[in-house]
Image 1 (tube, helix red, strand yellow):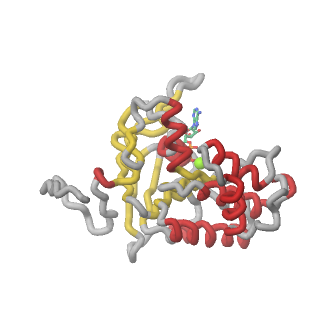
Image 2 (cartoon, protein in one colour):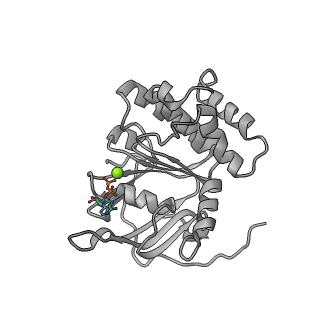
Amino acid sequence: MSLSDSSPASPAVPPDATAAPQPDPENAMIALEGVELTLPSAAGPVHILRGLDLSVGRGETVSVVGPSGSGKSSMMMIIAGLERASKGAVTVGGTRFNGLDEDSLARFRRDSVGIVFQDFHLVPTMTALENVAIPLEFAGRADAFERAAECLEAVGLGHRLTHYPGQLSGGEQQRTALARAFAAGPDLLLADEPTGNLDGETGQQIIELLFRLQAEHGTTLVLITHDPQLAGRCARSVKLLDGLIVGDESNGGASL
Ligand SMILES: Nc1ncnc2c1ncn2[C@@H]1O[C@H](COP(=O)(O)OP(=O)(O)O)[C@@H](O)[C@H]1O
Ligand SMILES: [Mg+2]
């Protein structure tokens, strides 16, 4: 049953007309508060993310755009728990990452987050079926292989179960990666330029598949892309520049 905790907090600053409405942080799928990422380099510390505040609601679809080097992938790695913020608070699906040990973080990621990369990140020595099934098996699912086969069939690869990544086309490899990403029924899907290594038509098919799976599962989606048309398919667009969020707009009629 829902709690009737209706705190009448009103925003200190009225939102402007095109700004995307921010979900209630208590209910957010992703909440970044003052997130900074600073990494050492030979030339001294590099300030990659310089104070990000972002709240993404459950089931929301958000594109992340911005020039190369603006920090998009770094932000995604922090949301995935694959990189630790140097400063600030990261909460995903109500789980606060700060202070969480690596094992708990890995378990959370396994159960709640699907990730798709530009270059597929499949294990080359495993078949398509094994690539999808092994993470499920690690998660303790007795039906890992049956479930993996189902997921591969759902992305049109029922006839490629025993193929190795090297025997699959780029599009087929990304379909396998999508099957793997959705197999455990994640609450959140993170995709980093998932069509970047594919030709236009194959990329389009992958995008149709990604949005179909997203809609079927009601998954929250964060999609990094250089393609404005693709960004426009998400309900909301966040723009990064030089480690800062410089734009955050709803796509319902708002110009990008
Ligand atoms: N491990 C690292 N050490 C130092 N600098 C890094 C590291 N990873 C990324 N960077 C730098 O951080 C900036 C943002 O990178 P990235 O998040 O990959 O941007 P984007 O995905 O928007 O292209 C870039 O200037 C990049 O060179
Ligand atoms: Mg990147």
